[in-house]
Image (cartoon, rainbow, N blue to C red; front, side, top):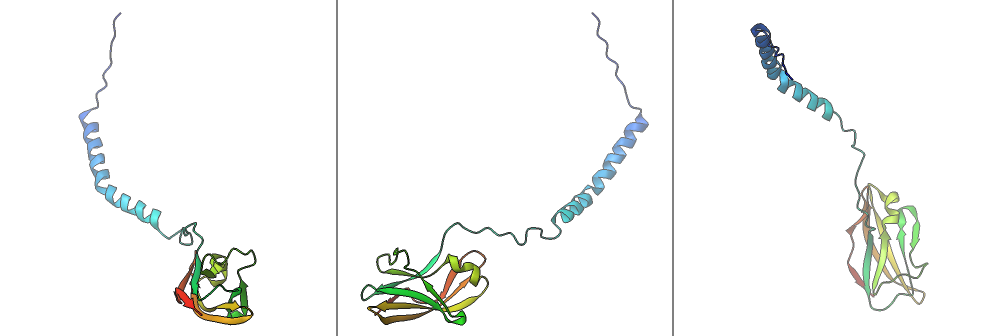
Amino acid sequence: MKTSFNIIRASPEKSGQAVANFIQMKKYFPLFAIFMFLVACSGNDHKDEIICTDEFRIVGVNVTGGELTDFYTVRPSINDTIPYNEDQTYPIGHWYPVLDDTYQILLEGIEDDFYFVGILDGEKVINQHFIIGADRCHIYKKLGPESVSF
């Protein structure tokens, strides 16, 4: 059994032209690559997308001097009263919530005054000022103490 191969050779003129085309293409490739990069990166198609953490933030305060019989937070600018002890989960030790992330949507992009009000046997014993704001993900405390006493 005899095997034969046909070898096709390009003429020197065609080989020289291919090399010249390759060199010319190589010369313009950086310009083409820069153009493609600029086209791909033009505009910010994802400017409204953010990544928030899954944590649930709560601004709170430690209260010393006794256990409150009731407490709530007031936002005077819109005359809002925010109760927290409906399910009896607070206080945790002596720590009481002032505001949590459920309020983030109402506060996004602004800061406002809040007052933590503590009641002991029907008498207001704490009326502590806080400034709380919210970004696109969570609330944050700008001003207010870590603990109060009565």
